Image (cartoon, rainbow, N blue to C red; front, side, top):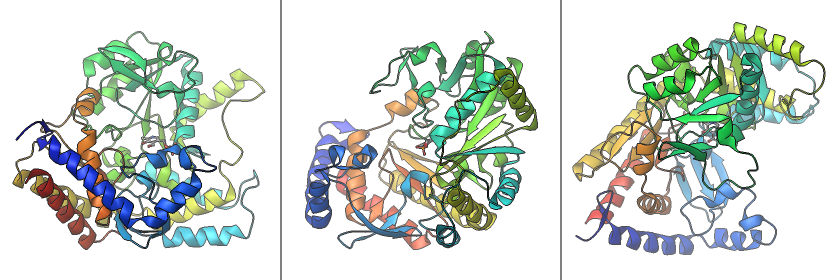
Length: 454
Ligand SMILES: Cc1ncc(COP(=O)(O)O)c(C=O)c1O
């Protein structure tokens, strides 16, 4: 049988990557031509380097997208389970958001003044997420950066705590990982001139003792975390972990920031509402305005009061928070439409069972072939992991990643009209996703596994 990677013969993986790469190149001549043209003026040929993080030999150029489908410039139609890596988690161009954008387009896009939409959006955010006070930023990265600043100002502590394997955007304070039990900079950082580990502590997710040890000096302003780690494969909280996190943060005077940017997939109001978490701050970006750049952060009344105290103490000047286009009229209009008509309980009532069908379906394909893999899901988000055991922390999740296997699967799926996220094996189901699309994904994964194994 030769060498195996995650239970798959390595020779088969290499052969699939080679064959599917050739197939991709042949079937996408227009994308290939555009990629060559784009190389003239774009660094690495793309306007944002993540567009190279796909398994393809050159980027797939998109012509159109609607709901859960995407069409490329060569005319192929895809079932899209990546959905802009959550930016379009509620579907591409949801009709109410598209209409709101079209309406606002003729009334000015940004004025650095509020519109009447602000009133309703504030009510909607408070009602959905259960926190009374809100601010708008433009990306989840910014929301997290600003909240970390607030937490430091409120607590007058300089340290932040993250979990190994976390991702909260390109937010410097969170670029710390564990290596052999020691904090290090996240590998690959460019232009990092100060030592982030001097202000950021890092422990493993689900490690209650490690968390307490890191908090007990009383120098940590906040813990920032997703309630389940979704950026290193998927790491679910073990029973009692999130309760312990809340108890320990309270015990040591540390604030708790829950980043719901991805776990909004859990259900209506996100993981926080579904599981009754009690964060001091909650951040969410990506899909909050239906795909228009926008993010928000909310806080409790107690935090809001402390923010005012911190501002008074800081005195006049610049807070280091806010960007010119944040909370622009277009973003508010889109967010209002999205919150009112798209991110609804009815939408989740469609998405959750369908995602469960997807997870069970892929699990059955895996079991049928005795592969040492498993599937985890957090509501509308599912992840098939090429390891037998569910990872309990970032280190185990990292060890469960098999880049070559993922590459082969992604390419195989793409060439057969199915897109999943380019990073690990993540799928999202949106309100427009159909049962037929889910069943097609499951069958195509099955076909791929057959070709890898037989
Ligand atoms: C949990 C989480 N927070 C924040 C971000 C950053 O989002 P953005 O890139 O839109 O700033 C991401 C991006 O993947 C994320 O997964």
